[in-house]
Length: 558
View 1 (tube, rainbow, N blue to C red):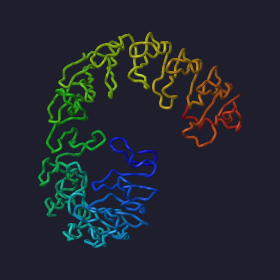
View 2 (tube, rainbow, N blue to C red; view 1 turned 180 degrees about the horizontal axis):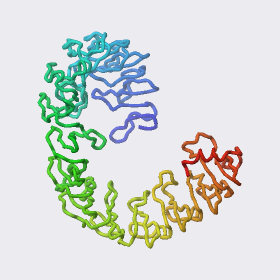
View 3 (cartoon, helix red, strand yellow; view 1 turned 90 degrees about the vertical axis):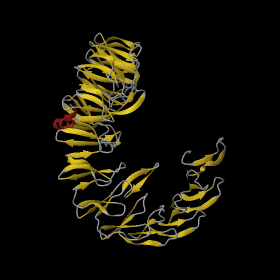
View 4 (cartoon, rainbow, N blue to C red; view 1 turned 180 degrees about the vertical axis):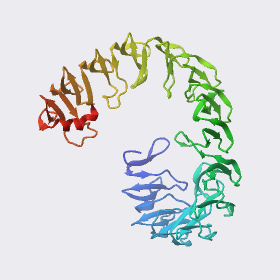
């Protein structure tokens, strides 16, 4: 891919189709054809750029069942691999032929199904339709009711259902929808649900359960009865009795987990993907991965009803006893930080103590835990991942600099702050009362706000003074607007310490630029007790502003 164009090279890098000619090219399909976009029109070529399907279509699809759906002048039809129109362009929707040999089509506002010869197998007279990827059943809607049809166009049920559920499934790496391959088919009629088998026989009758979910890929589904929740299998058997206040799939790494979390009164029960109990009577849990016997395996952190933490494997076996006040994630590493009886240390997945649990605190970067910051008897030092000291315990405070968390640290020694390397070499001398770390709307990774002798300033991350710490207050708006005060007078400078507004005002207010819609910057200033608005050239835009107007406008910034 180049800039807004695609091409082809062979395995030796020789150009076969140069960049600059085609806006888009698909991979070569099984018949040697390449889907292509040229001059905002679509067609097919081969690797020698011979045109197989002319570039005359506003859109087209890849081939399914040897036909491609094409669009021209707002209408859709089908072509074969020679580019011949075999089904005229007459439909309103882009569609494709499924393995059943049918394609869902729309004319006007009505739906039906055609075969590969364009014959209407199910007449185009229905208000809506649903198709599955993996099975031959289809559903059609008439007068707001649904019915089942087979792939030969034969109607299998009356139009009696208010809803019919499709579910997602993955079969041999191919994802798609199904009515019944996950288990039973969920249907709704007159506000009641039922489950049908693939032959559309009622396996679970209407009214047995108040609510029901689609079957998942493990062929089980959550149901409720008398406001209590349980789980049924593909045969309708209750594998978990409806005794719980709620059963749900918790979120795991931004997706829905296979396991179930079931709540009853004041505790949770964990169930595996088949509904089998993993662990009972816990307050809370979370997902983690630990290195167990040199293999990375999923585990669950659990918290008991007394607030203590431990860990179990996916079989529900206790691998970390439930005794800890805190239990941080392994994150696939060998060790995890724990807190026990008010002190911190490290354990492995066998609950072996790998670093003594006698420290005030231990911190690490959870994503890259190659070192630990340890507070031992109010002295901070750094250990490597093998627990060898790489920075002696000579500091009153240590925190990684947000711009280089591995190598640079804000440190405190003899009551003063500075910045050091992980080796202890000083970058910024220990002379400041405060040094900022990450500031959301600050000047970025090249600077630190500092405080010295109750005065404020700005230095680079190498310790060079930008704005000397001689000011009573410092407010950073952006690199062009830093409001400072000194000896009761306010002014504005840039990040290069170039004066923008002289230090002659008793107060300066500014509306944050992220909220302001004005083209030029406006400063509300007071001088000799009078308020006015000035621009960044210190020119008065508006004078005689009432004090109450200014105070009301900026009261929440004080």
